[in-house]
Image (tube, rainbow, N blue to C red; front, side, top):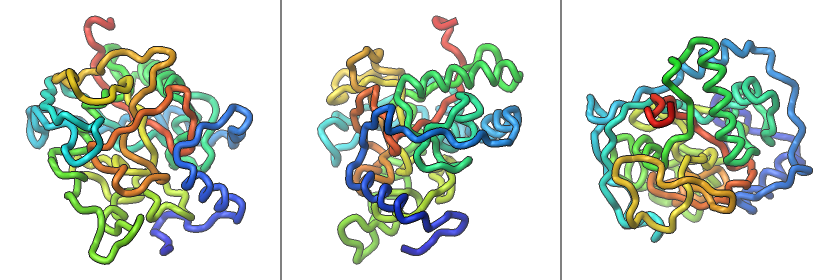
Length: 304
């Protein structure tokens, strides 16, 4: 594999063996005893990390400028869970994080870093859905205390519809860059067009990338395809029958209900990284291929 600029392309032999194991195993749930110990705290100041997070939020304004009011969610080319394709109309503006949550911010907010593949600007992983929501709540409190967001704003997980809207970035193709992930001659897991945008099984082995090492989508959002599966707020449904058309969260997550994850990961082939691809995952799952991306939004009046 060719090393990429600004990305380490080697790791100790045992770490590489572990990486290959997880690529073969896919999204593997690990017990608490198997979780790695947190590395030493990053010396960078917490306030500065909070300021960086706010600076890296991308304003999303449906119905204004380049942001369409509506989009077609799902795909007729994918799995049954991606159908029926349905129209979603978004009326509220929000801000989507430019990157998946990096480990230095996660540790500053949560006081620990459970991630298996350590690096201050690597995507944080190895936590479950409940912990992802707790991170958002704590980050909200920290940002309000630092007066970096308003009292009526919050940090939360995106709804599944918000996530796909942002991944597509105004496109209706299979990926935000087009329909084809492979160049002529690519076979099996190779996908050299996708390589420019995403970490997947065809290019991830041997790399410990920081967030944003590859190309963004048309709205400047990085790693929407690949790197880590991203938790969203919605519980899992087997199809989009009777899905809401306003982009809101579809129902609430109960103790035993699976949740939705989006985007694909470095453990997946290129076809799982399509804009419409979705996967069900236990809310208690913990994996080095599971992470999160945050939304900043106005608190709904009913939540005040």
